[in-house]
Image (cartoon, rainbow, N blue to C red):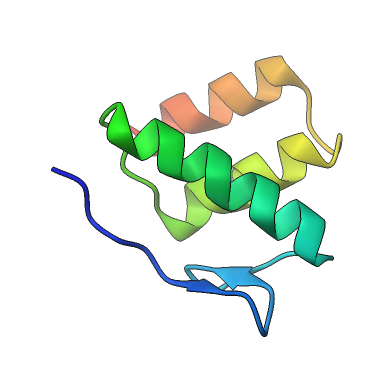
Length: 72
């Protein structure tokens, strides 16, 4: 079941997670929304991981490892 999440375009946050600019926020919101329709359930921790991955701060392998840890 799809549940809306808080996207604050004025303060550049998704579920309270800050983004550096509007473009990054919009890309993340689109990707998160698409994945939610496939059954993925976002949390602030998962959104932080996605933000850091999209910014190149963590590798794909690290993303998978950390997501696996969160889903346990």
